[in-house]
Length: 175
Image (cartoon, rainbow, N blue to C red; front, top):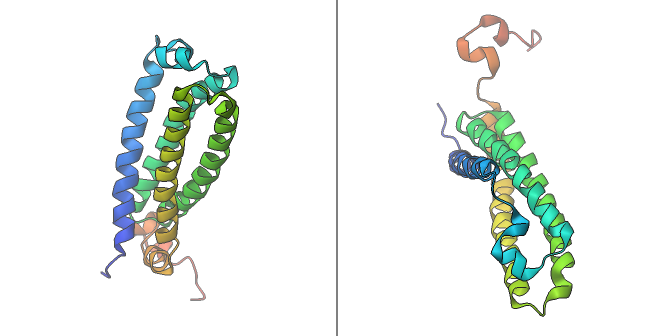
């Protein structure tokens, strides 16, 4: 068996770990019925616009969905499936775009309130988290888009071939 590029295993483990932990924390946050973003002390002191508070509620719903996708990508990569690579690349591009758009909108919503030092802390934390997320996702997309990864995964068995069904091996009778 030929050696597979390490990036498949590295991003498989990383996506599985990050996806699983994000899924657990996202679901646990949703299950906390008493949690109300608008009532936390920090957000009362900052006096965020209503749209920003509404966005935080939506983010709590979208977070476990995003984490589940990342977990699925990781499992697909660990199982050395082409669909895992394809989904991871699509997830990476989508997450980069989504992160850039939503962070820009949120920063613009609160940037007029910079007289409050906590707003500057919030903006800084948004920028740092966006940078770290973008760095990871861009690195993942770069390495999983390499020809060596695509070639290695293209040569892996798919579907029924794993179970040694002869019919699956005869998909292309002209070959």
